Image (cartoon, rainbow, N blue to C red; front, side):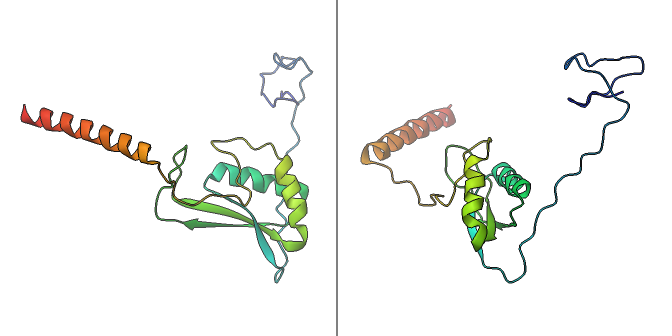
Length: 157
């Protein structure tokens, strides 16, 4: 026996889901995921999203798939971790759609509830290195010197 809402399996004899408070069924119909629509060969593809977060990429791809928008993806190795508020693997994932469906795809992604370690970067991915102010540089140097002094004192013991 199964709950048709939360899909929890129950032993025989139980008639109602303890959580959902609805009647159980003998079988749950198989859920067939929607297949991705692949862009036609030769169509001009444009990038609508770049992200360093694979979860964002997969969530966005799922949104496009559900909307029936053809897309393809690309992954490339950058060779280094990127400095940001969160640690990011050295990969960038890109979503590409046919040019004539780009605006529709952007609307889908703008309305897609994407949650994950970071927000989706819709063509606004800032890859420039952060510039530190003089004050920040001085503070970083001071902290480094303090740490280095501590290490030297530990080594002298």
